[in-house]
Image (cartoon, rainbow, N blue to C red; front, side):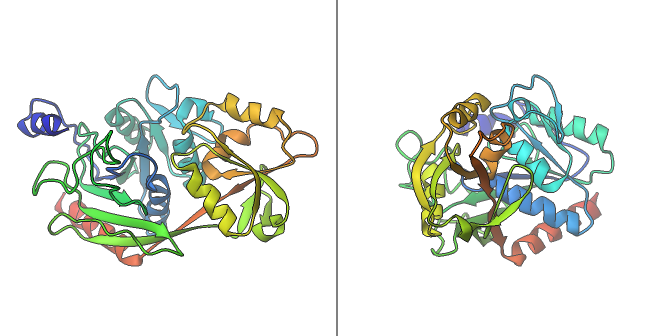
Amino acid sequence: MALRRRLYAAGWLTTHRLPVPVIVVGNVVVGGAGKTPTVIALVQHLQARGWHPGVVSRGHGGTHGRPTQVEADTPPALSGDEPALIHRSTGAPVFVATRRADAARALLDAYPQTNVLICDDGLQHLALARDISIVVFDDRGTGNGWLLPAGLLRDRWPPLHGALGSPDFVLHQHRDDRPPTAVTLPDGVPDFNATRRLSDEVVGPRGERLAMQALQGIPLTAVAGIARPTAFFDMLRARGLTLQNAVTLPDHAEPAAYAALLAARPPTLICTEKDAVKLFQNAAPPGSAMWSVPLKVDIEPAFFEAIEHRLTSLTTKN
């Protein structure tokens, strides 16, 4: 990473700059730290404030071979599950490509009214120039402070002062029943807090809703194909649900894995929103029920105010 940063800083490797501001939401630890929920919350806030955001992603787990627009009927196996979830949650234009700059250009060509781009992940993808970078931490913080494979870090933290890739903002996400984990901050980088919790309602394949409390006392099969499945299972148990089975699938699992799970005819199945993108493509077996649990992320208003202030200054400057 240090060598790559030097090569980009020296101009030996090309950085692509786009005609609209680019916000990169990423992390420096392995596994899910809450990037995608942050992207969704940020897109929804900007939409409510009159901006026209678009989202670009690498589309991990997808089979796309060229810039691809993620639409309501785009198979998650093609686009990747997280881009599909972002589009379904926000309605914003979402494009995926192996090279994020290619996805961004395709999006701007198709939606010229777009005036801000948000890159889901890509903090270490230095080929795409960013105007604002956000590092998201969860309750693990930086772990033991060691780089992979001895620890959680996939990049140096804190970064060297003034180093290429140093973030503009830090967002600490933590469960609403726990305090945030302390993280050493680079000099002058503001940090903000966000709490996350499971929704009080679960959602079915056709959008039907049910109070989560109604599932208490029912033996459930819980499914999580995410980076940290045990965190999801723990949150379900904390809400008083009984997990008869807790099924862990690989992050970005293939759709066939969900079809095989349903073949076992679990009576009542509960999963994350990310899993539902693939799971709900299948019909529930007779006598079975499927529910997904939205994750609610409450970000302090000062975070959005800081982002908008920076965006306004960028657009005024241009």
